[in-house]
Image 1 (cartoon, rainbow, N blue to C red):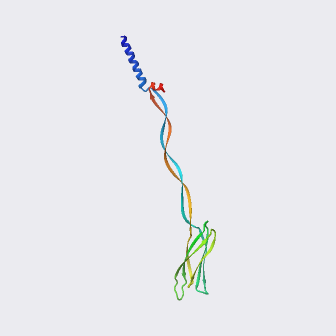
Image 2 (cartoon, rainbow, N blue to C red; image 1 turned 90 degrees about the vertical axis):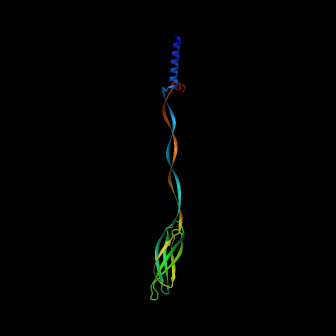
Image 3 (cartoon, rainbow, N blue to C red; image 1 turned 60 degrees about the vertical axis):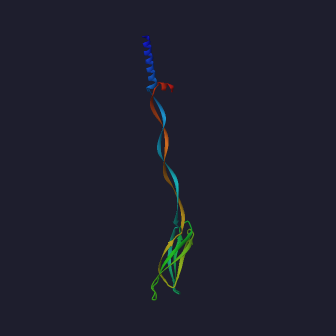
Length: 178
């Protein structure tokens, strides 16, 4: 009988030891780094270069018919209102006066004029052989490069980590070891 009691006692110890080492009986807290993804915005400077025409202003137009000879001067007075200088092209589309001998006709001539910033000049073309009744003109200004820059938003995904408190069940044996 004694042997049976010893065996029962040993069996109880084995069961208690197994429960203490294998069954999760104790809750413990711990921290763990958990990854998460975020979208970050950053800015990039983008530059853009483009050709822009120089600014100008037409001040006056004039026709000067010379009656002592058969010719006319057509004049456009322009001012460079820009910060750069350049050659302005003026195309004159002139309509001659109708005479008894000849009907009116269209004559086109062009002239170029260098203008510094703020400078004003008369641009004149002469037509010989007829008097001019009226004219129209078109101005082609020179261009200059203008560079602009702007901040453009861009996005990228990044992985960050945060510390998270978690709970788990451990055996008493694991709890006592830590």
